Length: 308
Ligand code: CDV
View (cartoon, rainbow, N blue to C red):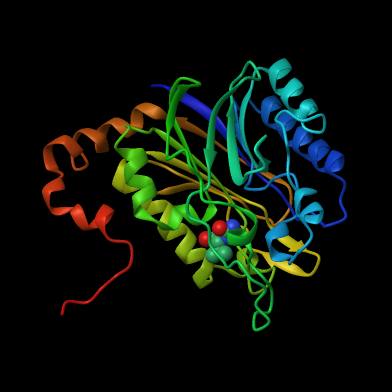
């Protein structure tokens, strides 16, 4: 057995006016509780340091850049790195990245138990739109504020396993999972901010949004024989509801642990990475069963086209 206790660290809402130092204090508190409960890896949400700002339309560059981190660790996030190193615990963290060249990405980093950044992923599937849309009840301007990730879907050997990351909308695309699966990934970390029609999606039972979320996570995990950890930013941010649904899925596609609230909450599970072996060696033994000669359309065509 190669068991790693993973803590999915769901965030409750972060209001627009909440200072980033306060958010980091919340993340450190979750990290400390996770360490106390024996976790070796903590997974934080997408854009974990701020409110989900792509819902706000901004024209001024300075207003946009205020949401971004030009360095990592930054002075604000340093306490999280320091505490993780002291506790000997790894984490993944989503944030808005500003590069030295002025490029902007929706990014996630993987930090090992020594507090070192060992992996970086930049979100590839960006939902939403570029321009202000007066017909929408709220905006979703990821395509305005970020460029598509340019790092592919890498995996890293760290924390005793083969680890991969993707972000929110990426989970709905089987291509994401298969590229990770083809690198023998054993645990996929994903943070998300999924808008909700109301703040009660989790409490009221499986709405269609939650259903699609679970379906995507469970299918991705099963079809690639990997653990998958999805972590929500949840609750109502300045009147805008985000779905909960933090969960951990095993390599059979079964949900083994799930959040119960829309607040800061830890969901822990002992993930045996050796449990990936059965699926990878049998039904999803890619080398034996895949027929790449028939998959050309996947990379040669973007949009669907009916036959002539
Ligand atoms: N942050 C996201 O990527 N959210 C999308 C919503 C907009 C559909 C998601 O896939 O959950």
